[in-house]
Picture 1 (cartoon, one colour):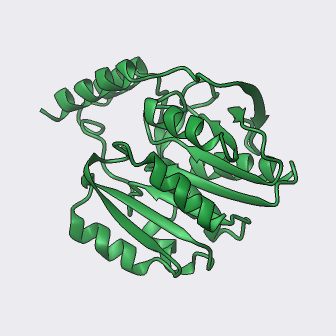
Picture 2: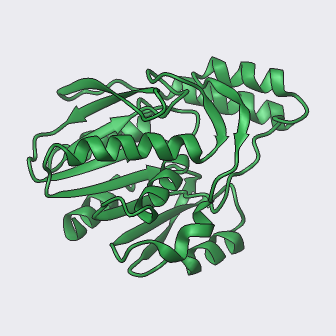
Length: 253
């Protein structure tokens, strides 16, 4: 049943990729460990930039990422990118937060070199975890929006008993999964040492972790912070709440 759920999720993801309907430019950067990261730049605000980091499995062309990028680009410069092992980026994704932390740091460092006065990150699930790790690592971020941030790494269905089938299904949706599990600090472990910047957490009604686990995690997050449970939303899905993110960023960035 869990393998069937993964297959259905894969079909949904493949059907819900979307092309950008706005002007953009693409470029590539390289991480410290030699992985090529594909990035997309939209908008033309020279002072404020928003980095959008996608969840596991979907890449930056997923419909929710594209919709939010297009909406925010009216007011901000926007950078989206593919994590290692996803989309047009190189490498493989090893289970854990180590690799995506490196990717997020590389993108953030590159954006900072472009002389924006303010930089925010909107991270979805895996992307939210990477954003929190960067913020806790003394890397300058001015505001954080975390959609469906997992307190810790959830277990993927079938990864231990049916590895080959799981990897084949993931490859069908564009994820190149490595063989390693990389132990690394989790969001719940670094939540209390996050810097005193504005933080906005959004969770769906249907999440990977139970509500009590999410609330315990959120209670550990340093102030200032806000939380929203989006009615009808699934994990890492906005269900029309893109405008709330833009309004929050207008106030806090």
